[in-house]
Length: 337
Image 1 (cartoon, one colour):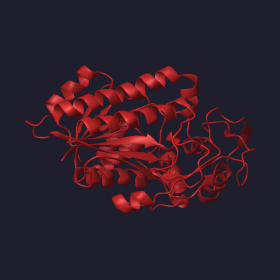
Image 2: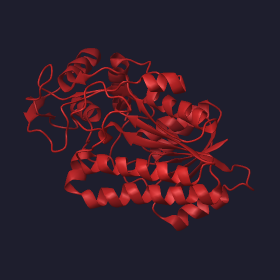
Image 3: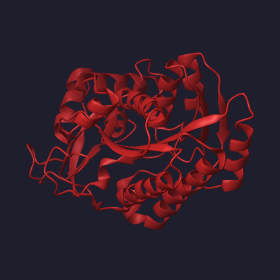
């Protein structure tokens, strides 16, 4: 079975490609490399020893995407049977500054894929959603039935894409969909070959910590220390990216054999503060990191962590790697980059 992976050169996408290939799937990868590097494609091949087709293209380009689907249509040797849709802009702060860019990129790419799913008879779609679709005043842990209400444009795009996919599956019941609402992916492949390597200044905590430890960044900015949390810093559900990638493989297996559309959280169920993460990284890797307290970022919630029981019950999935793994694997990748 061949899976199209959009954004497959990205952080989560590249790790999911590895797990798909390890599980026996064939893959086709599309990425415009706006926030990733082709080195990740080579890394996937090095880790797995497998070859696959990679196309540098923008998912919003319906003409280019149609040609890719035609090449891998039902009369080819590798017809696309499923899609895992990662492609999208993902920085909360940037989305507040550039909302139109985010709506254009994230929503239009999803619309194009939904058109092609019906045209080419694709069986299933896994969508890279986010915990940002939930209202921040929900009680913790977050279940899939929690009240939805994003507070930033990034979350709004995920919320709107979820609804687009739900409606598309209702109109095309031959296709099923899983909306994976995951929390905060961190870590890297244990080989150190692939990991989170953003272009420019990192937007996420862990690569910023790692780059600061390497001396690539002057200091780590901790955005807000006056939240109502254990130490005043934001609390998140950090999940190892390899665990997250395996969750996508489980989602494909489920979607192939079920109809309809399901939203499922992928998280550990445990909240960790920014300072707790920083202290663990320094201790585990024996490094010192300079940090300063900065004002809160617009659109950030104080606390967010998952109830992952639905993923266990439906997919047979749970996170297995721990905080030590997250910190050690991140540093191994950063040290080799």
